[in-house]
Image (cartoon, rainbow, N blue to C red):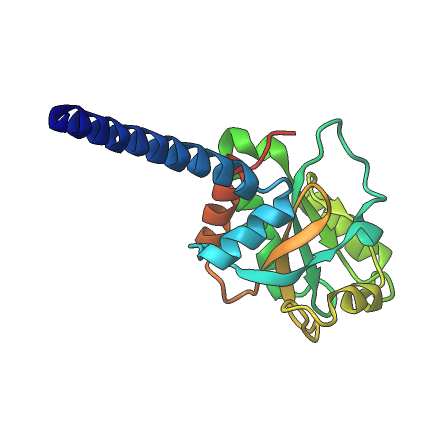
Length: 205
């Protein structure tokens, strides 16, 4: 009787261990499915909460730039964008940013096909000759004049709000969400590293 009781106790203990292991395994799998972000914005929000090594500053909350960018012709697969904006005309600082963005685009290698560069000059101060010179110097740059007041209004209240006196970069998702920004003081290598990371872990659409 005693031996039978001991065997039964051991069997129950073993069963409890098996059930505990199954609960842990399925619990981890379920948590993983629930935590996987469904959009780029959710993924970036999760990265912000958990901590990241991104070199740029996070746009919080993300800013929808579709009203300024949806007029740009889109390929079948929507692309990430490096958007350049701000400054009083395209001064030397602006020119340096555009050249830097071109070099970064080239350094992405095969991933460069998933990215496009966009410049948003202020349409109220843009001269035709300046536009033609910019297009000649940067043939693969999309130049999309906008009213700077519209951009400023969209950024108002976000961490990316600024007086627009200097030129800045923005990383924009294929869904037109500005998620990171960089000033001229940021290291261009940091932007390159961030783009490589985002393109590596984002859906290839």
